[in-house]
Length: 312
Image 1 (cartoon, one colour):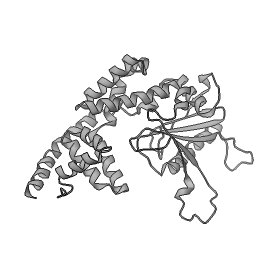
Image 2 (cartoon, rainbow, N blue to C red; image 1 turned 120 degrees about the horizontal axis):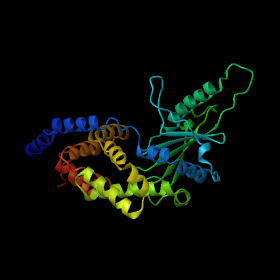
Image 3 (cartoon, rainbow, N blue to C red; image 1 turned 90 degrees about the vertical axis):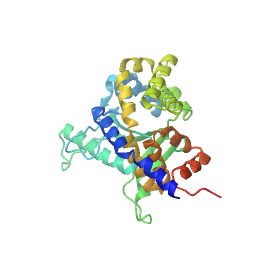
Image 4 (cartoon, rainbow, N blue to C red; image 1 turned 30 degrees about the vertical axis):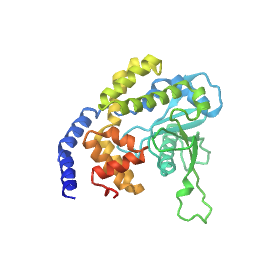
């Protein structure tokens, strides 16, 4: 027992240094605001149009008809979304998620209210007038690529959060959550080449991170390999620095730890969170990633870091 306490103390002894490094890293990357998914499809309007067609079974060809209406950061903004645009009377609102949240419908409800407010202001119409205000039909879609096992498609409903399920609700909002991890939703991927290549790129970054100890080295290797294979080749060649910046921000240690703590508290997986934090501080984040799918390794790591007694 004394040795175990000493080991925990020794690991935590590097906490201040690691947190300081993490803060400095975040300081250098604070100007990187856009996530890769959003950045990719906002840069390529043709790809965004292909994505719309793939999701809706349409065949639009003029990308100039797309009107980007994504909610940006501002003092008066309640929440900002990843990507939103209007095409042919349809308001498409997209979110990219690496973690599942049952609260996605209420988030989209807030997004929708803000989007409709902008539409009404632009039309210079009055909510108290006698004329019907025309509103674009909303579509709420989440593109999920996290590590947690998920079906190809899942429908989330706002009404699932309502306290009194015996009363008929007068408001409903549904969200389609599509699994875009590589190998899932093949028909959708075939119809949108950029989405398929994005999925392959994410898979490549994960593989390289498992093979390399240094995150930056792993991400550089993933970018090189994808360029060689023709995966997002032109995009990566043109925007390599920006892409690497976004990926490094996404894997920021401080942000990673904060997510682990929050998710662990919500799901009751406190030990897993503590293990992730300790392994990250010890420079062994790859061991943690492996432990998520290897229960035996996870048990051994619990014992090693004093989170669980060794079985006799």
